[in-house]
Image (cartoon, rainbow over all chains, first blue to last red; front, side):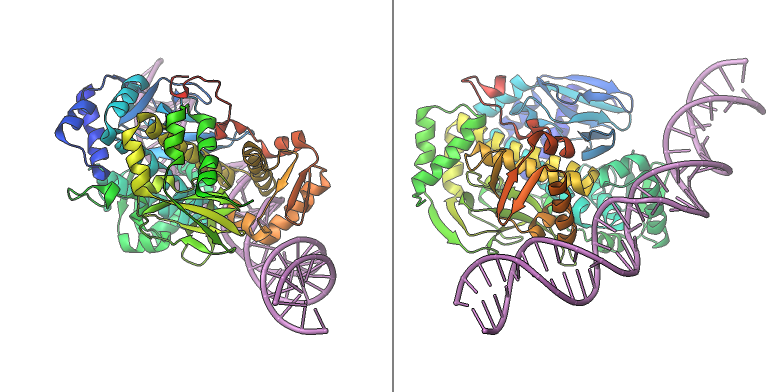
Length: 252
Length: 252
DNA sequence: CGGGTCATTGACGTATGTCAAAGGCCGTGG
DNA sequence: CCACGGCCTTTGACATACGTCAATGACCCG
């Protein structure tokens, strides 16, 4: 799909409105944000480690990872970002970053100047709160990742990652919990789960053996969602995706 | 030290002003927040898992952990909070929490109604931004924990945790990187690092053997900070504690 | 003095890592 | 259209860091 800056921003307003009540004017203000679209090959650093940025990255298409650094060259992915995610919205308030952003698959990204985002936040308390909430959801996911990597065994970890991605992909209508495209190699899943590529491969085999999922090429097919959830000990509430019903979530 | 609500809030404004420029009026507005002080024994749930809260918790004294849940009873601490931390400030925008808050040592906490915090944020863009930034720093620490637990071995993990706590305790003038009180048992450090109590014990022994630290009773004495940092592969930039010098950090 | 929590230590088990080789898949260029 | 090279996946044999279990000792408080 060919994107314009505006259609890209629409993905972002959709994401925000999953959790925050925004009216027409506010949505329009966000859609009017300036930004430039960029296409990237896989394995390109979009933001380099330790850089000071002056723009935020809205993922429009593809899969992007946030990488932490360890001295000996091993890498840890601390977040996976799918279309609709403004993956470094927090850099608006902390411009010097302590991570790197790298494309995992061919991706297109809309770069939006901090200045514009910040101005918008300062001018509307509702938008400001929506941004704050979006960053807090990101943190909630990070907490869950700490639990995942810290206290679950390899099988649970990988299953949990698949569950999370399924639900998130479903929420942006790129597949469903019955199946979705997974543009990540086994080595990349390993970097996200704190495992090795070899072990991820064996876990995939186990999951197939359980009859829970089929993973072929870049496609995940979930054969038994309940089983997968059970294996993963997955509880999606941390994603905070319950649909708003016109109520004000801050006051919920 | 006996605290009043106001002296407790002073800890929080100090913390905010480490990273955000706030003027006198704004500080005064925060100091005027309502709130009630509570004392807790160790191992008390201050906020229960899955609860919907209507207040945020400012740690005034003691040590508090944020716990993630795993089905089989094993626990993972996803964040450690020291005095000055408003450990669930993000609950203002996400009131239904997906974690539990438990005291690790005798603690005193100021409970502040969401309503008041939210009103303040909506009325001042600077304060709103300071809150947003504070939550983003929290997320930055979480990222680092994912890296720690995902890609560092036990020795590095524990050393990293000690480095982080040393720097944070120093930043609130409760000790320094030469030594500080550590009100956590080995089992609790294990829950924070994704290890077992037995193994933490052995790692403590190794660190002592390296001549890097002495850990006695509830007291950590750092004998060789550079060595500890080297072992841990520690880079404190993720804590975002560089002092402001009157400049606006958003525009840095 | 006695009971509880915490720290320490040893013997042993195991999940996961490491190393290495082979096979599948796919795009590129001859 | 085939051959080649590159990346990814798969598999096996083996190594090891960390977990588990269990016992003992230290410390603290009632």
